[in-house]
Image (cartoon, one colour):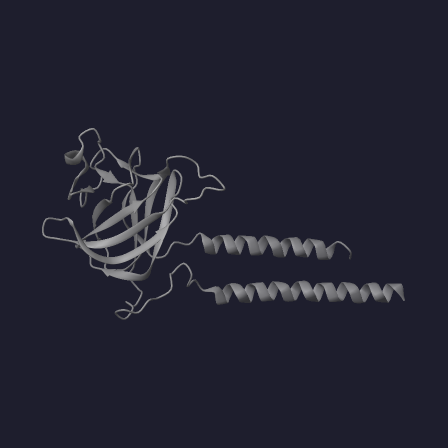
Length: 234
């Protein structure tokens, strides 16, 4: 009997780890638009943008961008690298407008995808062109030299908004690496009402029930084991 409780505890710990990992891996919405080549990059000192045309109508829950750091962050670094991702509409020329529709700030990833979940999300319409704006410190937004994404293009703000090639022909960057996620089933939030991030709004009630059930099993096993030990000692 003495081996049952450690074995049960190990099983509970394993299940909790697997369940928590699964929850954290969830990205809200359905993958809509994407350009996933990141063979080159451009620094983030100035405002960068990537236009895209929504393929789905619904709530734009999240955007992923592929970034790389200039240097690995130090543990005691006084100024932490930061990145701000914003969504805007576009004008008749296909250039970003000044009205921010959604925004999120975080820490750039080092040679990896970083997810930015918007709260509140913004309702996009299929066939309409939007823009992803990225700005921050200490990183590059990576992308492709070839025009891999036809419905949009990479842009830079330098007094005016222009393509990368027209800004500096030494850079071949035509499209930044990005992914957009749209939830077609979510009800749009009322105007001016903030909603929690879909990542934070996962169905935690189910997880709590699982945890409670496992804890109850463990407690019952422990009680039975202790009772039997007392009987044997008597």
